[in-house]
Amino acid sequence: MLDVCAVHELMTPDLLVDAFLEDDHAAIDPALPALVRLMVQHRAGRSWHKHGSFKDHLYGTYRVLTLWRQPREICLCGLLHSVYSNEYVDLALFDPKEGRDILRQELGTDVEAMVHRFCEMPRNDFVTQLAGPGATPKEGMTLSDGRGKSIRLSSAEVAAYLVITVADFVEQWYSWQEGTMSGYPYTADVQTQAGWAATLWPGPFRPGSSGLALVSRLARHLPAFGLPVPTVFDRCTKVIDEQQEAAAAALYWQASELQFSLVSKATVRAFVLEAVHLNPWVAEPRLLAAQLDLIDGQFDSAAEHARRGYELLRTWGVQWDKRVSWQGWVIWARLLMQKARERAWPTTLRLHNNLGLVRP
Image (tube, rainbow, N blue to C red; front, side, top):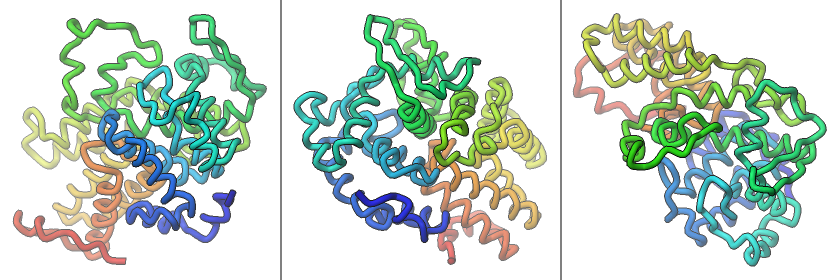
């Protein structure tokens, strides 16, 4: 099987982003077009998942892992990570007993086995153990589903499934899932009648206010395993405070939705900059700050906010504010950078509708 490093060796981060923006699957991995077709043939595009289709989620998880320059087998496992279902979701695109030959033929025996094991392992226990204060399980770990089933993971399996779990989580997490999975991974069984309001999909579609704190606790283990370390959270060395994350999300939401009595740009800017200060790991508050700067002709500041926002989107491979697709946010960030360089911004409302072309 072709090594992912050979495919991407000559691709700069920006060119790899371009390939994802343009759905140039063959440029990303020559095997990817056939795998996407296989997913579609098995109902991935017709199956629901959190904020879109299951196909979008699988492909988004793969995109994150690819932009993190993970080994090819890990990226492919991420692409098909829950297709046999797991303890969280009912999404068996392939029968876990009789349908494995299909994926073996497409992925090879080793990668298919990775996918199957990821689906069958007790994932809640995996996340619970790694999110706690304990040491990194460099020698592997034993998982239990609490009902008598246990499984032993090697060190290599822990590493692979950990980076896939982080990518899987950030791709899907937003306020609706946060409400229905409140307290994850220590989620209690709340009856639907009592918590009915949390179930009304899609809800207000806010960014999550607790997910990154959990993800940062998981990601802190990654540098110990020898995989390429994602550059998120300062190369996985920082842990975000839960209260700061929640405050940043609330400030950003109030500013972006123009809630309450935000009657001046100065007030909105103060909210946005405080959100950036409290949670410097996400792009969207910076892009909102860039737009406010462009409106006021502060082009140098706008350029810096837009540049940093774009770098964060490229680094994550996924958006935090899921009202807009990752592709939409990336293109918007590039447009803001372009207008800051040109030192120009529409001076009438209707001219905002003329924006669109992003030049090389």
